[in-house]
Image 1 (cartoon, rainbow, N blue to C red):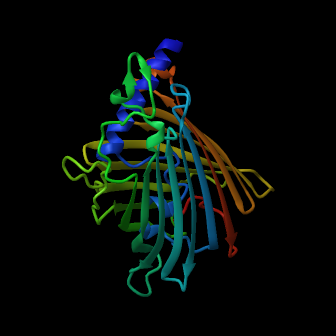
Image 2: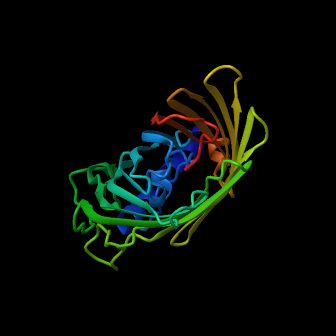
Length: 333
């Protein structure tokens, strides 16, 4: 098993080098993609009107089972409603890929509810984000064929690669539309939206030679509906489709919320399937102003031979200041 793990580690590092040089790799993904609405769609910024503000922190540890240096991702987001029709916020996102390649993002986010006046059940929102992405290639942690001499490795030997730079600062602009239903007389509330990221399509390659590589646009389409089954149980079936260059992701599943009688405490459970990739189980609790969630990806892709079905561990913590009223829909936007 150690031999298999070593082989796959070398393979993953080799692939990462190619991706880092050409920078055609896709964005990171998270299993709890709706935990931080601002990261899912700019149009959702501050659109949950029963709160004064919200902080969300997410952390993901991936591929720890098959490589000595796992892929670590973390995000911190803040958003708040403003004067009924507006929302404002910001996010920080950091992805450390096996300690050899890092991507750091910061963006400001704003949204506007463009629903016609005197209509408070069906909402159509638009949002935009603007910021920067800093990509860093940690050259000292890579090895190249040219650095092997007489059967040994010498880090002082030239790599033979012509790197234009080790850092890239890219402009970032994201855009999105979202719809949600807030009709409290109904036991179902559909929602959905579409978001486009990296609209500037900036140059992002590190090598001075070869074709110019640009950060591919990312498209996200999602939808679902909150369902009230009874006073104690709510469901949230959902679907998300993501496309970036030639990579597709289809994620389908549902979450359940069980309200404990007589206390301000809600149990959260969920199960999702990411097509040809992983089965994701999650558990959480909603207590007063906090939501704590943990999820785990059981890898079912072709890598399961090496991973033994192990995938990614993810945590999220949400803190929000309530304006008052009911917590009937926990994941409302």
